[in-house]
Length: 185
Image 1 (spheres, rainbow, N blue to C red):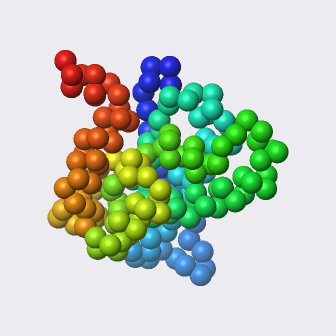
Image 2: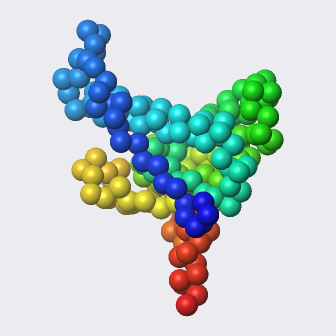
């Protein structure tokens, strides 16, 4: 934070790799493993995000950014609503958290665009951005070299030219400030 470097988190899938087979669901097929792994990646990411919020790290380091890589996107709107509601009832437990968690997350947290885990339509992309409450939170990512890449176009379906510029230039330069300084030289 002192060097103004964003901190990036990418779930290792550690829980997914250790998740035991159960009598109800032996993971015999790749699809079973991939679907369970996606949910566990999101769970890992949510745990990190909750820890970040509850610890007051964003209050202590107001200029710091946090990038959540390859954890999907569509879970975030529900998470923000739930976090705000829970914080309202439990904020005495974390008095150093003085704003709604959704406000803190929108200011400090960024997510990568791969995998974009939403139906492939322009309407859904726009709805997800609106539900996130910010078009500044998404950073471009290709998911290369993974074989399970979402398709031939590295951008979410339905993204317009202005949104592409935001994902590939505006948001990254705001997140990685040293790129902006270097770009000016």
